[in-house]
Image 1 (cartoon, rainbow, N blue to C red):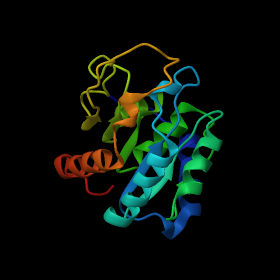
Image 2: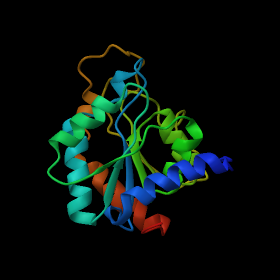
Image 3: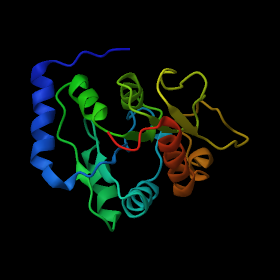
Image 4: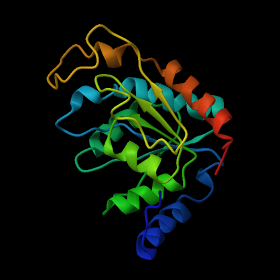
Length: 194
């Protein structure tokens, strides 16, 4: 798969990373905590994302970069406010190709079953997908890209109840589960840093 990114979009992303300077280490993990407003049942909690991000920094010496789409910046800010460690926030992306270029420069992507997860997989960035209510076979990342789906079996999943308030399928997934998947993906993809 090849997702063409214009020179202008690449330069926009280049400028962001130049501005970050030495704050980005060799291992760069993109975390996208948002989901479609119509699918809040796919969201992992901000507390778990912040715990995971802190552990990525502490245990893997990673730089964590939060990406976001329209209306999702407050979600990212909430996750970052809960963190003990420093993290980065991606710039506002004016196109999906700018977002793709950001993901292309990351070592691994972490997030729920969302469009950004599929974009990351299309540009070849290894993906750790956090799956609750959706079917991991039907909604899997691009098969040509290394990926691990973190999902726990619960009696009610997969399900289509967008209004579910219990979210047992997401609640049972721990930050340790996702951290283990990131570690395994880094080992098996042979991609310790881009």
